[in-house]
Length: 295
Image 1 (tube, rainbow, N blue to C red):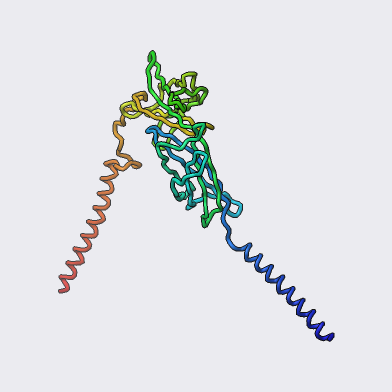
Image 2 (image 1 turned 60 degrees about the vertical axis):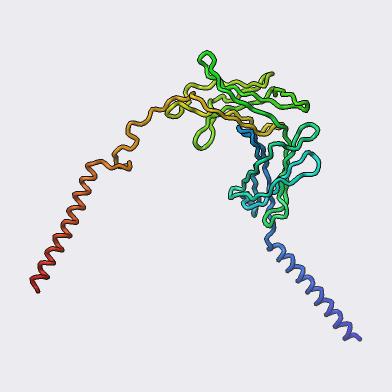
């Protein structure tokens, strides 16, 4: 009987040790298994010059304590008026963790004329589920270039349409003015922001020193950025308000650093290489004569 009790204790001890070992191994394997990265979504809305609308996301993720761009993340865009969201489109982010979708001309509005946009990461193999949403009203931003007493004025007007279909000015909104350049936009002056008045108008005195193209054309951009109620709105138009850039007399001069080399360098190289090839020809001819004399 004592022997049976002794073996029973040994069996129990072995079972406990085995269970503890398997539990530790399972926990260790679980810790080693790669998990989904936590993602953060930045969602924005833009209404462009042609009145088209788009929603954009910029997604970052945390990978082993480092912030990285969430490339190849699957994003679902929804539109909502406060009721059930409706799927608009499913897209994938690029290498910079960004992607953009076009929005329909007519957006669903709630009772206060707000529309909702929702961006979600759902059941992605790389990133944990995440969601971001924004609510904005629709507004219209126009831009006109005017000359008043030889002063160049960029005049922007910001309005919205109420529930009764009446156009109402938006007062106290900051409008920024830029100049379009090859790789983006740049502020038109050190002080490039104006505030809309009671008529929704923001006026900006355009500088006389902005370079244009060979005909003086320049593209002026009016923009409202990250407004709490209206998001991002942009309008642009062109005019002959820039300083005319005189074309270079000789855009491709003959120089060592230019595509066209100086004549002296060309002649020198021709003499050097001509002399080398003449030497090769002379030696070859002499070798041919020697070979014929042997015959």
